[in-house]
Structures are given as C-alpha cells and as structure tokens.
Image 1 (tube, rainbow, N blue to C red):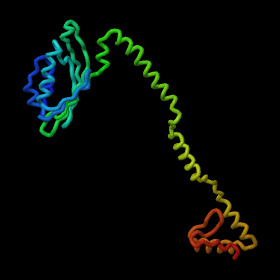
Image 2 (tube, rainbow, N blue to C red):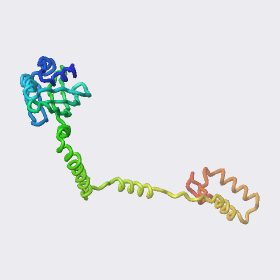
Image 3 (tube, rainbow, N blue to C red):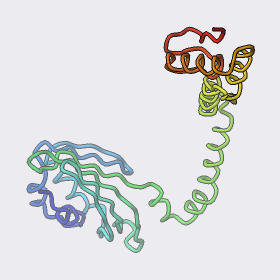
Image 4 (tube, one colour):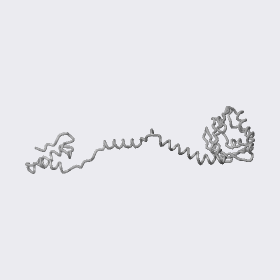
Length: 231
C-alpha cells in the first residue's frame, strides 16, 4: 500500500530515493503540468527528477496537505513552500495537486503534478493585483455577456409543460348534474289513464325484470332495450 508520508518525504532537497523504489512501478510515468511542463517514464528517470530539486531549490517542503483515495487512485492536495537558489531570501507559496494512479500490486503506475497557476501569481505583487482585480473579473463579465448573445439556445421546459396541460385539457370530461326526478316524470306521464293498481303492477314487473335503469333515458342497461311503459 502506498504510504502518503512516503510521498511527502520526497519533496525535500535531499529526498530518500529508496522510497521511490518502494512505491513506484518500474515503468511508471511521471508527468508535470508545471512551468515548465515535462513528462518522463521509468523509475530511474523519476530518481533524477527528485534529485534535481536540490539543484534549483535551496529549500522546499509541503506545509499543508489533505487527500482522498480509492483502490486505484490517490488525490493529494498540497500547499508547498519553496526558496530558489537564485532568490535565497524570497519564499514562494503555491498549491500543487498530485494525482497518483496505482495498479493491483499497489505500485504507482502514473504520477502527476499539477501546479495551480493562480497560487503562483499571488506571489507577484503587481501581477497579483492586476490579475485578481482586473483580468479575472473582466473575463467573468465577458463570459456572461457571451451567454446572453447565444440566441440559438432555447429552453424547452415551458413548451413541454404547456403540451402536457393541453393533453390533460383535451382528455378532461366535464361532469354533468344528474336530474334524478326525470325518470319519475317520464313514468308518471306514461302511466296517465291507468288505474292505480295497474300502475303499481306494471312498475313492479318492469323493475323486477330489469337489472339497472339508466337515470338519463329509462333504458335497461343489462338487456340494452327500453322499458315498455305503455302496457
């Protein structure tokens, strides 16, 4: 298993090269997205990369760090301090993200250094002010304006909602009030001229033979024929 402390100890002017042999695969790739950027392959080349730190730096260390990891990758977020040999009285602070890719044997197969350019600019007074107070806000404003000029973009969400509402409106059936007195009025009209007992007998016979009387037209829904109210 790759030990984070072993990686931290490599960032010094006198790194322990045995830690490279312990954690790195023989064909490991080392890629730096720094100033300048470079890429090498092989454990011997990686030895030389860390040995070169003492050539250009008087002192270097990782002051703060945190990391996340999975079974195949470690992301190490570091805050580093460096003093160059050509500027021995000036200390630079910068942020570097280190991506470590591992194989099944927990050996490092790819090692990536990514230096945050903004953290480097913060060490230069005039460039720091111009970038963070003029250039960066201006670029943000231009991006917002560019988005407002994009006439080809359409938000289809309201149209979809409107189409759904129209479908619901087309399928909606309005409920009508039912006049329960209508069939009784029809029965009373058809029974005019019959005796009281005949009316009762006819009603009993029709109601007994029918399964259900539709309250709208007096028809028998079970047999699909109208009741004979003129017997």
